[in-house]
Length: 380
Image (tube, rainbow, N blue to C red):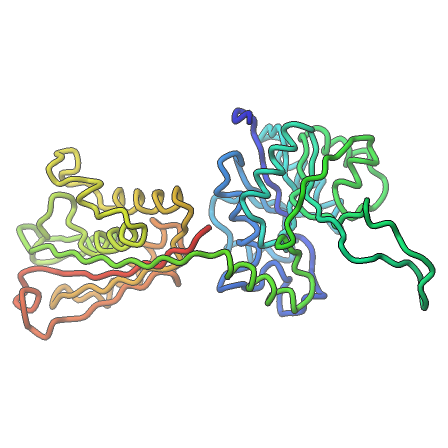
């Protein structure tokens, strides 16, 4: 494949989805604890050939956009699907895309293999879309059967529908009819569209029961990994220490080769542990002088990138700091916010809490601080 081209995914999320029920449009309803639209976006975010992901949304949903990752560009859509696609295509023109992938926000189960097949066909043919063949006998009629349709050339369309950018942008500019998808628009403009063998699991959530089906599909695909980490640093000279990325005034500092952030070290080791990839000391040896005094977020970000490279994302982390002093409670919310920022997570995916050892042991004697952490990772 030619990896020098720029491919942008447009996720269409301006519809209302009223048939699905619920207090908000279906794409913003939760599926396994996060909005359905995030499941639709993630396959593009992690695919090595997709340069960027944008979302076309309804102006009524502006308050919901904070649920999306910060790197996602968002553009307002139109009154119908055609208008929303045109808005998205126009909005990304300054980004100079070579190709565009148009995907429904209500399709949360797209897998990497199908996405790769679609991109490969698009790069070869100029336009491609996934579809599944029809297995059932097809009738036409009204109150009674009037005949049978030949199913050998009938397919159920899916997304992403993939095009050379100028092909689909020009096709939409000249389109005068309301279309149900972008393949229809492209063909009306005279362009051939290759059919890629789709996947039955690549469902579109339309009705309330579809959420349960999507959960079943995703549950079958997800791999769960859990790891734990433990770290200790002793008190030393200084008047400030750093815990979970937050500087805290204290009568002493913490001693360590890096910045001695015991909480962040424990979380980092929990991630490495879940991946079965050793610990901080193996990736950043204390014998290496370049890590002297280093900010611990360097280690944490490395662990997160390693997880992504191995096909996992962080679902949540839980860290307990064990010390008599300083008191953690006044700082815990700031710690959660800082850790969430570094890790690219929502704050409610990060738990930071503290306990004492009831004056027992080295922490009870105020000789240092210990931390224990757990991390749950799920496959992307």
